[in-house]
Image 1: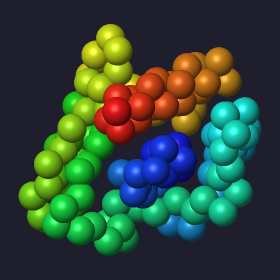
Image 2: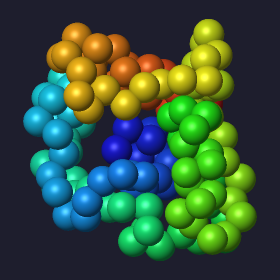
Image 3: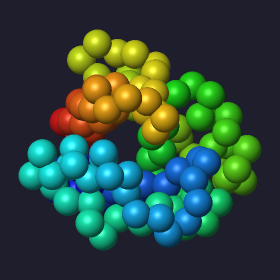
Image 4: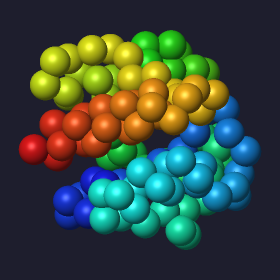
Amino acid sequence: MYARSLGKQAASCGLNCGDGFPADPRAKRFAEAQGLTLDSHKTVNVRAFEFRKTDFIVVMEPSHIASFQEKVSRDYPVVLAGSYCRSANPYIHDPFNCCDEFFTHCESKVMEAVRGICG
């Protein structure tokens, strides 16, 4: 969503999610605080996602690279989102089961990485 607000084509999928679920309520609140909306967002599992040959794949943690390659049979360029942050870090953790404060921290890091990628 944020990359699209910056004029970039972007889509998302998850390595370990179901299909068709709405965005996490915390993600919706975070997006709204940034002037964005996730009201129409629905989850898509990586196995159901339709990739294009030119896609640039961004994952959050080093272990996600192997997981992505295992679940998707084609070879795509894969990069770590955190390597595009001001202080490069290979990990931007999935805050799904964490407290709200850590969730907000991780979402802020994702936005920082998107700015780095799009910049």
